[in-house]
Image 1 (spheres, rainbow, N blue to C red):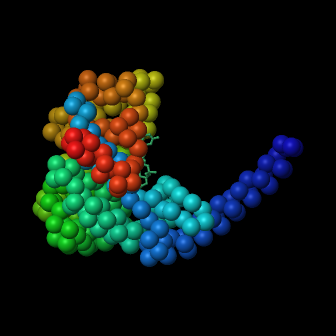
Image 2: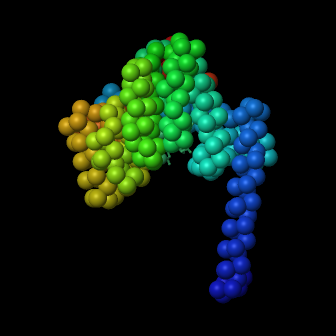
Image 3: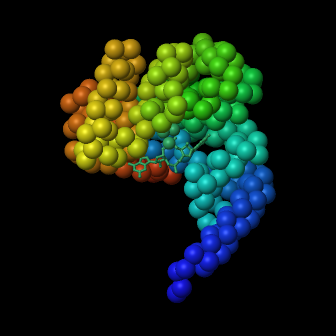
Length: 275
Ligand code: C2E
Ligand code: CA
Ligand code: CA
Ligand code: CA
C-alpha cells in the first residue's frame, strides 16, 4: 500500500469520521441500554497485601451491546458523562452494587465509582442514604471512589458531599491518585479514608526508578496521614513484594483476580471461607 502523506491524511480523516459516528450512535444506544438491561456489574477482588485475604470488591460496569458485543467502560463512561446519562447509570450501579453486597458475608465490602456530575448533583448523599436504607447494607461496607476531576469544579460543594457521605458512615476513597493536576492539594482538602495508587505507576514499578520512588513516597504519605493505601493493577509477585515491603495495605489487580461476574464473585467468597 502507498504510504505517502496524502494517503495517510485520507486514512486519518476516515478514522475520525468513523469515530465520531460511533460516538453518536453509542450515545443514542446508551439511552436504552439501562431499560433494556444491557448493563452488568462485574466485581474485582481487593486483597490484604500481607495476608492475601479477600477484603472486598470494586464494582465495575460492563455494557453488553446487542450488536457491538462487550463495550468497555473506558469507551462509554466518557460519553455518558458528556450526555448526562451517567446520572442514570450511576444510580443503577449504586443500587445494583449495594443490593449485591447486602447478600454477601458481612466481612466483605463493595467500592463504587462515582463521576463528577454525580457529585455536582446535590442529591448524591441522599441517594446513597436511600439505597442503604432500601438494601439494609451497613454503611461501613460501602466505599465511594472519587477522582480528582470530580472534586475540583466546585470544591466547597464537593467537600460538603464528601462530609455528608462520611456522616452516613460510608467511606470515601481517592481514585487514580497521582494522575490529576493536584493530587496533593486534593488530599490536603478532602478527608479521604483510602488512597488508590493508579495502575500506571504500578505497571512500571519494577522497571522504572521514578515509578518506584513515586509509589514508595505515596505509601509513606498515606502512612504519615494515617490513610490506608491500595495499589491498583497489581499483576506480578514482584510488584506485590515491593508493595508489601513498603507497607501498602491492600492490592487489586489481575494477580488476585480480574473483574468477576456476580456468581463467580460469590463462589470466590465461599471458597475463601472454606465452604
Ligand atoms: P478505574 O476505576 O481506575 O478501574 C480500574 C480499571 O483497571 C478497570 O478497568 C479494571 O478492570 C482495570 N484493571 C484492574 N486490575 C488490572 C490489572 O491488573 N491489569 C490491567 N491491565 N487492568 C486492570 P475497567 O473495568 O475497564 O474500567 C475502566 C474505568 O471505567 C474505571 O477505571 C472507571 O474510571 C470507569 N468505570 C468503570 N465502572 C464505572 C462505574 O460504575 N461508574 C463510573 N463512574 N465509572 C466507572
Ligand atoms: Ca475506581
Ligand atoms: Ca482507579
Ligand atoms: Ca483509572
